[in-house]
Length: 108
Ligand SMILES: [Zn+2]
Image (cartoon, rainbow, N blue to C red):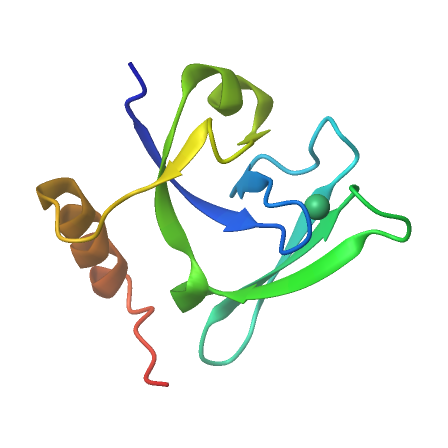
């Protein structure tokens, strides 16, 4: 059963979910990351369209997903393979605490 928790970004066009840290992806998509003064930002270029669909993600926009084995090996997956975790589970809380400890908190 799927048992991997990862931060992912989701293409707004095709809903493919990409795992952070696996760029470049086999399907031609890639993720750029850069650090700003207050946060870390990501820019996803999804190959589902030409030119690529670009979406921007702040650290605080990232959600935690449960990733199936197949999607984990690939580094990305469809919504059926990469599930958005329900908040308020114990494990999600653990990850949130980790994030806060890293000083990534930002008010919006
Ligand atoms: Zn896409």
